[in-house]
Image 1 (tube, rainbow, N blue to C red):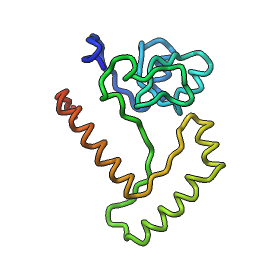
Image 2 (image 1 turned 135 degrees about the vertical axis):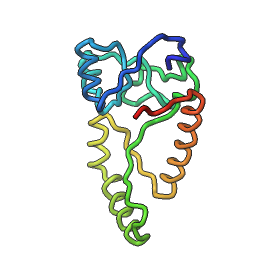
Image 3 (image 1 turned 60 degrees about the horizontal axis):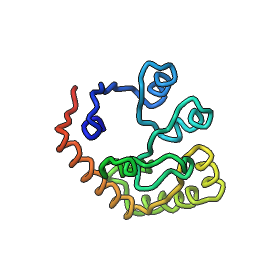
Length: 155
């Protein structure tokens, strides 16, 4: 974002979204990237102003807030976040099938869909094949971004 907008900013690492949001509310930082699940209540209360949303489409819970793409940023900001269910690599296929079936039942239940919407989370379910394809695409996308920006992990 800094490169595309030609901003001189300092990245501040946090151990989670909530401490960063607390610093934003205390005006210790000027901006940050936050999920709707983490910041939605603060946005609705008017304590935090949503400037733009990542993804290809506007957020259903923030229909008046443009996407980064609409504001002129590249498709690097078309990436959506997600939550997923993972299992150890050596889990037997029959066990994975039972876990997936149970997860599908819970994840697509009307009560769960309502609850996810209440916490500003867009409900969706992908079977294991589609989820694996999503992860492969995201890994390619993020690898390209980190390579292009020459990002490194300091240890």
